[in-house]
Length: 331
Ligand SMILES: Cc1ncc(C[n+]2csc(CCOP(=O)(O)OP(=O)(O)O)c2C)c(N)n1
Ligand code: SF4
Image 1 (cartoon, rainbow, N blue to C red):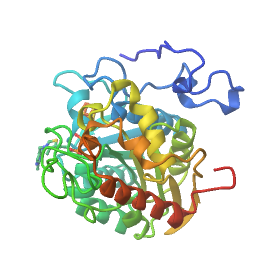
Image 2 (cartoon, rainbow, N blue to C red):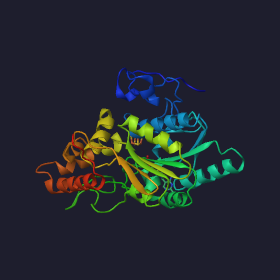
Image 3 (cartoon, rainbow, N blue to C red):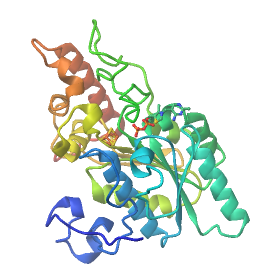
């Protein structure tokens, strides 16, 4: 049964600037939107992943006239949306296993093409554990073959569904269940892990982008662009997780914005292996402003704190700012 979208917030960015002229409004401001991930699912309050998944899928479905199939890796997004026999999805949705969402999506795209239904598009999605770790070989194969799939990684920087274990996307210094805040270098080690967007760019695929759940216009524009292109595409979206990050449920969007404004999470686009744009930082903030509200970093500020480790995080942000030229004159 389809459910009409209801708006409870007025004049807020969360519903896509309904006060703007029609052609500048987001898909989330459209009462006719698909509402791909509808109410009744069991995500935690303030879950950035749930919000981003709805934003992405509503925009993607709109861009292709509703002719969209999605394949979902195991993880929070799958578990909270589909406790059998219920489902919160309002579009064709397949659950793959943890590691192979990219391969299943490639197969779905090939099947549709060979049966003359290539107008139906395929979007695969998963968490950072399912994407940058266990599913990485399948994803790299999908890139390398240039399969006609948009793969979306919702990056909450750990394996949240199974109790907040470290992933290859967990940042240096962050506490998780497997990187305790103990010892000389508490939290996750610095200098390990991987930057999935840069690795995707190195595959020279048609389109790679990063985004955050805080910048709805930017996120939707990137989804639209991705759906206008054929071949392998990758979108990496930062989605704060109140449970794993130890943040207030009301802080999800603000934290995602601070990640971008500090330079820690660069928001970029690349086509054919070349970076073509980067969202400039307006109102730069020191990384401390982003780290302090999160309990996963509490050990960096307790007592005398660890200014040396905060400085290491700051250096990573500074490096991103230089790499992508993130500061414009107004910053
Ligand atoms: C092969 C395999 N190993 C482990 C699991 C258990 N498992 C299910 S979900 C999950 C964590 C998912 O983490 P992530 O992909 O980061 O998504 P999130 O839950 O954070 O959104 C794990 C380890 C599994 N389902 N299959
Ligand atoms: S644990 Fe995190 S990612 Fe999972 S449902 Fe809760 S807030 Fe969302």
